[in-house]
Length: 216
Image 1 (tube, rainbow, N blue to C red):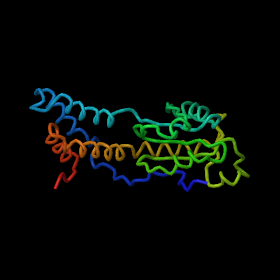
Image 2: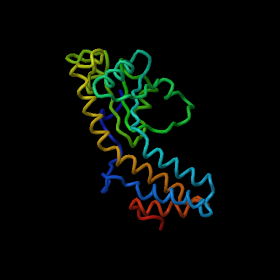
Image 3: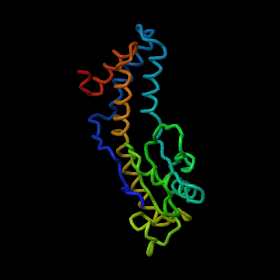
Image 4: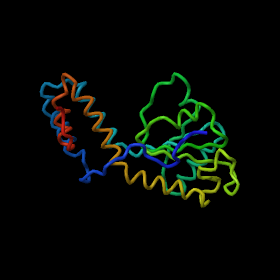
């Protein structure tokens, strides 16, 4: 059985002190673009713009699981209940050996219908900064099998089913804390770019605009 916290964000995040913490960064990068880059390469500016685009993108919710896990049923129920439009991923493909690491989502829900196999256990143990919820589908919530005893039992065949409430509450909390998680990611991107020989100075200034102490 995986040792996994069913509802967790593995890295604590401090809420931003202003409503739009990236606003100054956005202005700085936009100004550099308008002024022709000020010696910064087009590729360097593009890297900064891509980091900001990820910060500004719509919330990325992923519902993941293997074949027959109920992932599509749960995603449809969430669309009906709250209008969320999660992306559905095949966990067997994502967790395959040798697969390149993909961009992490904002929120992740993993559906298990049976006891997790080895590659699913390994996936659940991966370190992650975003929020993760693991649910058991297709099990008796009153008498769950041993592997599912510590997981929420979810029956998403009817969108109104009360078992989905735990998923809705989890997503509400995750979306509320999304700005903090994205700030951490933007900060990491800017730190990476701050040592770039062409865009480093602008990335360092952007880090300062985010309130980061900068390089020492």
